Image (cartoon, rainbow, N blue to C red; front, top):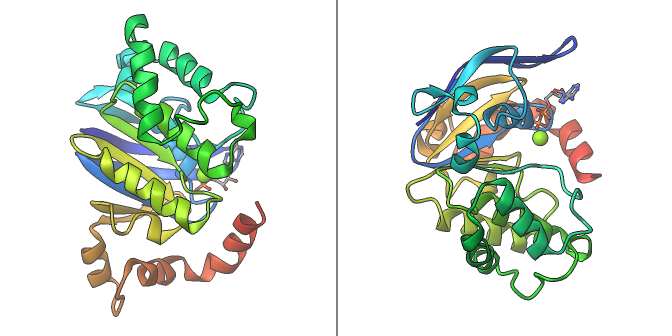
Length: 249
Ligand code: ADP
Ligand code: MG
């Protein structure tokens, strides 16, 4: 189980997260909120890349800081940012990540092949990542996140900038591997997660305002037929501005 206890984080005077507490068990969770809600900050804290000002992240009752390098084999993380590895071929990038994750030398080749076929990138494996489409780049990021079969997978906006077909493909890929794992997927696009998530975590301006199943959330927000309407109910007034900035990216 992953447990977050009263996590807060500020950047200067900007409070990005306010006392976030969560408990995640096996299954897919959607972390839903508009741009600036604090999704990436929260994910960076869960992955141990960013230190919270206060609070703790616990994996099976142990603080992740005290797990040290062991946490790296438990965790798979696909960050939001792309473009850091454009000069690598897909295969070399995965080999490099496998070494960082501590996968033993004799298993690397087999594991790289396994994740390449999982995301259907065998044919492009030896081309530079810089030549990949947006969807292919997202898939190679997801491939490295699932390498070594980690029990906790964090995917930060894995469908950002993709066309509807690619979105569906990524969604199905996530669903495929969800058994016996905790998967946290951030998005501001409801349709990415509404059919696959066990629960939705609604993050608004750094505060978790609810965590529940899609059905339960629809019941709570009067007259909502689907998650889209719940989203509009909660974030509606922010929508114009947020989407304008996303679409221009
Ligand atoms: P999301 O991923 O939901 O879009 P972020 O976690 O990236 O949200 O950002 C949350 C808030 O913190 C935003 O207001 C953002 O501008 C601010 N923020 C994020 N990273 C930094 C940073 N390195 N320095 C200053 N402010 C930041
Ligand atoms: Mg983000």
